[in-house]
Image (cartoon, rainbow, N blue to C red; front, side, top):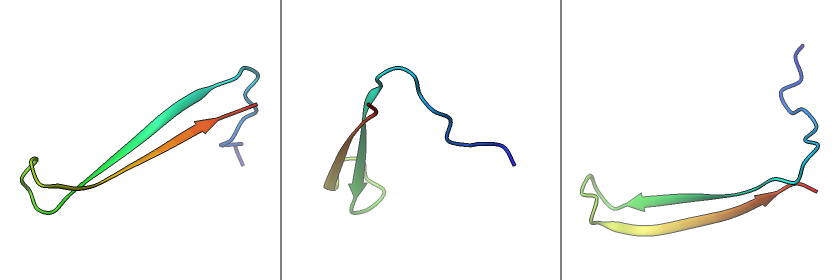
Length: 40
C-alpha cells in the first residue's frame, strides 16, 4: 500500500476557508470557517 501521508521535510503552512450559504445565492453567507494548518 502506498503511503498517502509522506513526511514533509520543510515547514509548511496554509489556511483553509469554508464558506456556507443559506441557499444557492452567493450573497447568502451564513457561516465562515477558517483553519490554520502547519507542520514542524
